[in-house]
Length: 204
Image (cartoon, rainbow, N blue to C red; front, side, top):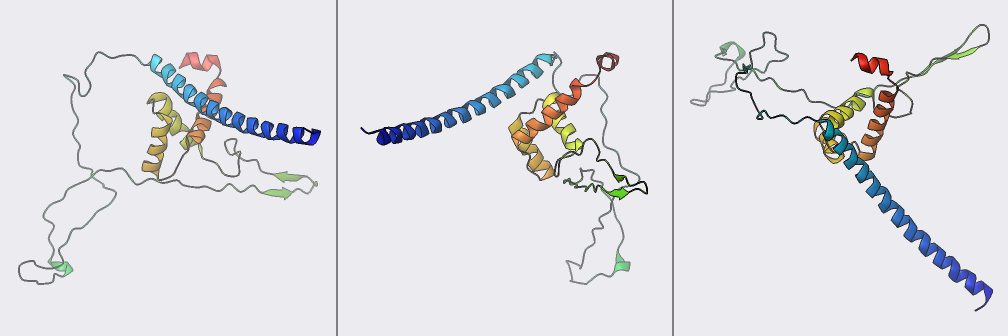
């Protein structure tokens, strides 16, 4: 076997090994991510105290029924167009309100995008002065603080796994939030929490 053939075989073998190594690395990263998520869940559950009380309403607790609102946010007037008996068409002055029913519901939610424009001006002294972006606005396109806060609440307080959180955001707010993005949100929140002085934590 000549030198060029040997080099060619070694290069092919090296390429095959490199491909196998990439596959192993990807599987290792996926396994590590799942393990970290499981460890976070175990850590949170370890702080959750077991309650001996039965679930649901507790004995002796006074219930609260839904009451009518004096100033509702909207009104739907249900008026018939014609008489089902004879087919007569009704005019506006023929209607009489017989009864009312109130429905209290959650509003439809969706993302609201706000554009931050950074402006500059040249001062008379020659200084080129530009405005600063808010500290939380540090990328050309990003999610806001409310998304951070809700992701943190669902993860830390309600122990919701990443997959269920993505389904929640897609089903309730009609936008997709990937598991890696959720992880970035939580990492950002954990970084903010680590900057809180110990004196402030003890005073809570």
